[in-house]
Structures are given as C-alpha cells and as structure tokens.
Amino acid sequence: MTIDEIRELIALANETGVAELEVQRGEDRVRIRRAGFANPQEILAVPVAVHAAAPPAIAAPPAAAPAVHEPPAKPPGPDPDLILVKSPIVGTFYESPSPGSAPFVRMGERVQPGKVLCIIESMKLMNEIEAETSGIVESRLVLNGQPVEYGEALFAIRAV
Image 1 (cartoon, rainbow, N blue to C red):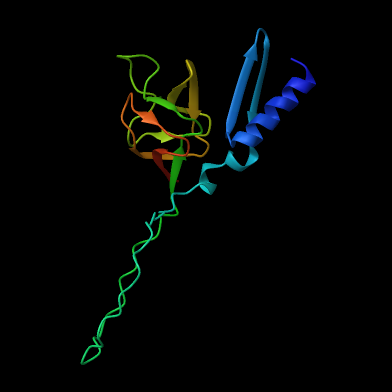
Image 2: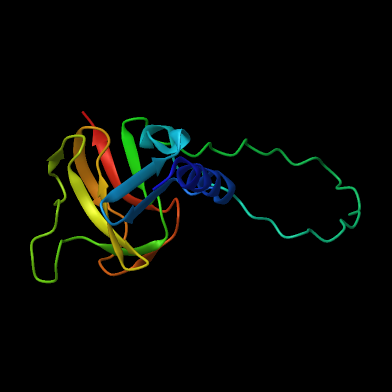
C-alpha cells in the first residue's frame, strides 16, 4: 500500500465521519482510528428530543385567577460512573465468537482495557469491540444477532 493510498483512506474516514477504518491488502494492513472516538467516556448518552413543527398557537382567553404551578422535577442526570460502550460502526452485534460458544463477557464481570466485549459484523468482516476502560459490566443493551447503528450503546460499564 502506498502513502497516497493511505492518505486517501484518511480523507475518506474524515469525509464520511467513520470512527474506525481497517483495510487489508495481502500482507499490508492499515487501521485508521479518528481521535475524537478513542475514549468512550467522552461519548455519553445525551437525550435528544426531536420535535415536529408546532402548529401556530391560538390565544386563549385570560384565566380569572393565575394558577400556581410547581416547577417540574428535574430528571436525574447521567450517572458519571456509568460508561456507555458505543458501536463504532454499523453492523450486526454478536456476543460470542461463534454460535453456541460462551459470550465474551457476562453481566457483573470485571473487565480491563483491551478485553473483547463483542463482535460487530460489517460487510463480512468481524470487528472485535474492546473495553477501553476498566470496570464492571452492568448491562448489555442489545440482543445477540441484532443490527446496530453507528454510535448505538452496546454495553454499560460501571467504572471502578
């Protein structure tokens, strides 16, 4: 693989917004990982509300007495000790290396950085998704064999 080909791959990753790209040609293998996607602690779930265009408001007649309203209770914020491991690619989630074998991790298991959590199959390639922090696997958020989207939360890990 030439330097120009590698530069084209980097440009492609930047243009498409792909978090990680791996290409292998014969003995040559290149993995490109964008810096903004390296630490899952930086990528926490933030609820996003999608609103349709609201119809124009109709003026209501004034009420006889103003109503007293209590301020709405604030929903609890995201747990700072809970880290979401998100999918870096679109594909199919697999919890084990092959059908019928034990899953890579179980709920309540302690993991260290580099521990394989699952596989995501994308375009006939099996991509191992590894833990990037140490902690305890609190929950698996997708089902085995389920299609996943880019950025979809796969696991919740409690930092220890």
